[in-house]
Image (cartoon, rainbow, N blue to C red; front, side):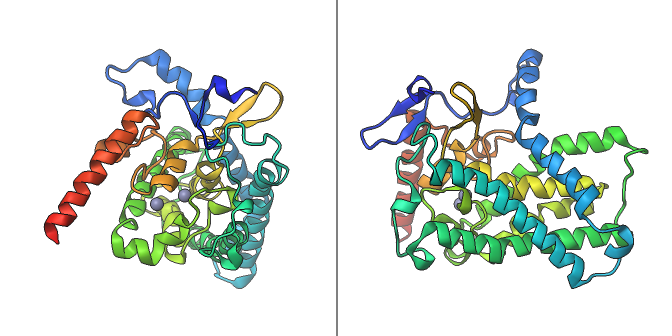
Length: 335
Ligand SMILES: [Zn+2]
Ligand SMILES: [Zn+2]
């Protein structure tokens, strides 16, 4: 595909999309139904449908029986860890292999023209972003994701929290599924904003930000505190009446869905003229500029409301610069 029909490439070779990052049409006033209906399929397909499919596969084929889960034990916890790790190895691995190892579409639609494998750096274990990110994901973050999973499944199995049945309240649960990605956005925005506070940033979040040019393995490369808080989004389903399948979906939006922001490409070419949108640009800009776009790309436009949005345009650059200038002045005034 010709990526210059969709964006521009600068002298260095970095590509950026035309247009701007906008809030989804739900936030337009007055609401326009045709626009909302046009947005809806892309909301469901392919990413959220995929997360639902994996949640169902887990529930019916992976998650142990309720009887088993009434007792906490290493057996089923390690089983879940093994499946989570294998699933991420395959799912993230497909993107890594096709777009970063084989470089099937070279740098078409790629925000940063460089590939992490070509840029060794001392900030990473073994000077390798790939190895560092991979090891942190599999030996720190995925175990913590599994801890969250074991805790909420055990709470449901023990009857500590309400278990809403699909037969009894199908409409309520379907609505909860549709809202889950929004819960994710809000949860992520606030924990993310919190760990950008100086001392917490240096202690916790700087680990994730070592990857200025993120790639699939960067997605879950986190400090343990962040790895736990990030996946703890599923605990909301212990507070609101819910169902373990919806909680699993919520968890998978976080774990499998983390790859979206770190794909590094705007579009992933599937064939000569079909491609799937990554929704990666807002979070790519976050990795590039640090103090913009703490949330996602506009499902809940929290960055717009808090004045931290970079919409990917020149005006976005100007707004960010003005904000950084103000911050500098404040810091100087204090010093
Ligand atoms: Zn990130
Ligand atoms: Zn951050």
